[in-house]
Length: 108
Image (cartoon, rainbow, N blue to C red):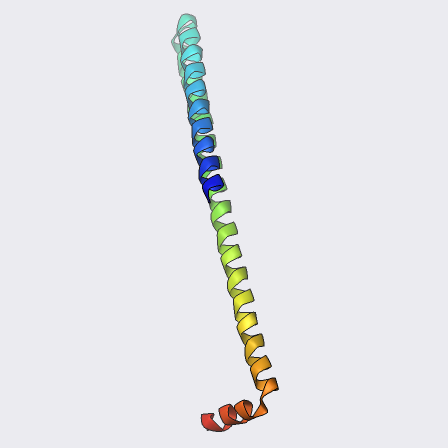
């Protein structure tokens, strides 16, 4: 549990550093584009917006993938638990057939 929290904190720090570096490179690119003219600035801004949209979409897809993996794991665990319970019932009835007979006749 603690190692999971530490790795999550490390991931957050790394992501923040990446964002800071990206913003710095974007500022440099815009400054160079300003030297070239208005059309270059518009082109750079459009390119940066497209990159931002692509990164946002990739993040959404990754979050969806993680969500689906967690749901699948929960379903697998539930199925295993259900199978174990069913196996335990069969085991109880096979050890003592009187319980089985009582359960059959009590339903009627």
